[in-house]
Image (tube, rainbow, N blue to C red; front, side, top):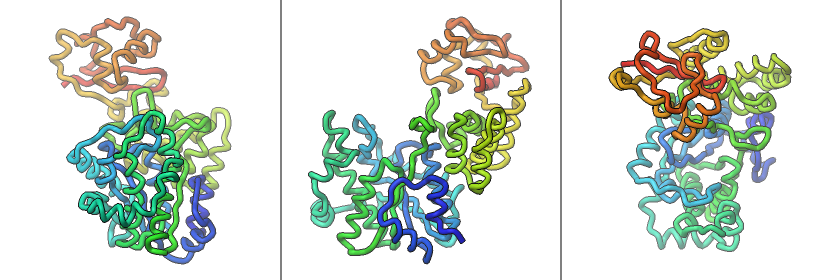
Length: 408
C-alpha cells in the first residue's frame, strides 16, 4: 500500500515539511494523529478550505486520525497573516455560531465514529489561561527578534502591528502543545501562508516536551498565474449551499482555465492520478469534457451526487438553449414588489449577482446583463409584472451565469 505522504506529494499538496524522511517513515508504520486549525471568521467554509479538507480525507483513508481544531479562542485575536490591516473584531457569540456551522460542515467530509476523527475548540483552553503562567511556560521560548522576521509580522510593521495580533503566534503554538498533551498529536498541517505560525508550535512542543513532532504545509488553491482561486466578481465561493448554490459552485469549477484543470483535479477530487493526468492532457474542445468531470466530482463531494447531477443537467440544458429551471439558482420575491416595479440595479443586488450598485451599473452599461434573452441597456430600467413569464424571469450575467427570479 502506498504511503500517504507519497500520495500527498504526487497530487501536489505538499509545500514545506520538517524532517521529511522521518515523517514519511512514521506515516508508513503506524496511525498518526494530526491537526489542522480553522479560525471561525465566517459562517461557512470556502473552496479554499477544501484543499485542507481533502488532505484530511486522504490522511483518514490511509488510517490516520484528523483533529479539526476550531478557533473559538484564536479568532478572538485574529491572525495577521496575509492581511494589510487588523482583522475585523468579531463577538464571541458570532465566533461560537460560526464554529458550530464549521462543525456541521465537517461532519459531511470526515468519519467521526469511534474517534476516527475528533473536533476540538481552542476556546476550551485559551480562554481560561493564567496570563503570567502562560508567559512563563510559553513566552520564554519565543524570541521577539525572530518573530519579527516572520512574514506574517514583517509585512505589517510599516503600517502597524498591534500587540493583540503579536500574541497570535504564541496562541497557535500553544494549541499544538495542548493537542500533543491531550491526544498525542504529532503533526500540525495548514496552508503555506501559515508556515511561520506552524513552525512556532512545532518548536515549542520539541522544546517543552522533548518529543519528535512535525510540521507540514500545503499549497494554496491558486491558478497557474498564482492568483487565489475561489473568488468571483460576486464574492467568495462558499461550501454552504445557501451562500453559493450547487449550480453556481459547479459553474465556477466548470469555467476554470484550461491550464488549471489537471492541478485542480489532483487537489480537489479523489480520482486516481492516472485519470487526473489523462484528463489534464486533453486539448482543444476535449478539455471541456475534463472541466465537466472536475465540476461534477467536486460538487458531488461537497453537495452530494443528486445536487451534482442537477447542476450538471442545468448546465447542459442552458448550453443547449433549454431552461432547466428546477436546477437553476433562484430568488423568491414577493409579487407585490413588482406591481410598481423594481429597478434593475436593485434586482441584481437582491439576487446576489452583484455586490453593489456600481458593479450592477457597470455590467448593464457594458452589455453584460440580459433579461429573458433581451440585453438590458438602460441602468434605470424598471422590471414590472408584465416582464415575467409564468411568474418567473431569468436573468443572465455574462455568457454563463443564470439566475431565476420567482414571484411568491
